[in-house]
Amino acid sequence: MEIEFLREFIVLSETCSFQEASEQLYITNSTLSKHIQKMEAELGHPLFERSTRRVTLTEMGHILQESAGKILAQYDEALIQMNKEAAKATNTLSVAFTNTTFRYGVLDTILAFKQEYPEINLQIAELQGPLQKSTFLDRQVEFIFTGDKSWTTKDISHHIFAKEEVVLVTSADNPLAEKSVLSLSEIADEQLLLPDRAFLQDLLFDACTKAGFTPKVRMYTNNTQTAFQLAANNYASAIFPRSCLGEYTGSKEVRAVTFYPEITFEVYMLYMANRPFSSAGELFFDYVTAYGRGDQ
Image 1 (cartoon, rainbow, N blue to C red):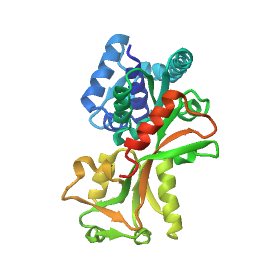
Image 2: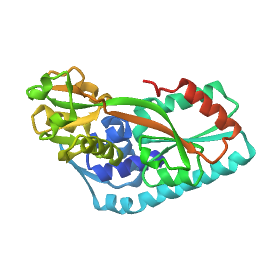
Image 3: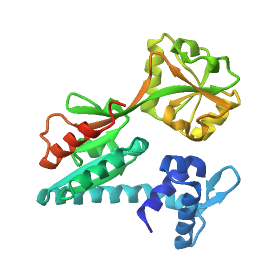
Image 4: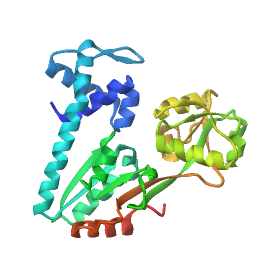
């Protein structure tokens, strides 16, 4: 069984939605469905009961769910240890990124660096869950890309790799949609949909607190299709990074309104402040700071 299929199974078992799981995994619904079907064929048991809206785990699915996380954790830990041993004898660079940063060109930049310096043994990891922070703090990777600035301390430095504005997505019928820009105080009484990501919530709550109010949150979701469909139907207004609009860009049903002062979501490249770069790390740092997207 391919290890990535097991990762996809875990996400689907947690979300119970092919649409939401595929968005988190950055794959299509059909691709996810095919992978799950291959798993079920290989194991000889159905793992999910499917309906038009939701999926639920079967008894066999629950059994697999109990062990899947441990299997992945052991696999990731073994991979990390092998990468560490390989780095001792080769010109190796270990770089990781969290799944929330994929849309910002992180992987494209890493691969472009590899093309520029093919002699470097580049180890790439996409981290999810609790291993994200521990992997970095245990110095098992030299750089990590994340949207969570709370990781930074006196021992951890950061470079802004990319940033984009956060916008209010609201129904075209909402009076707020007629505005070219909004101050945060103008949404103090608005029912809101926010991303179900702690660091994005912290960003938005901090901004609202500085504007003198606590946001009225009606729902949290990472499913942008759900958020914007609810916004279009006046259930609540959504606050998301602009790139999440996707197919709703230019939609007649919703409007995206910019805030002033601007609120921005940022992607950071983190590295240990008190540890010298490896020779490959120096090249990578110079490459990213020269060609990254921090000024956009």
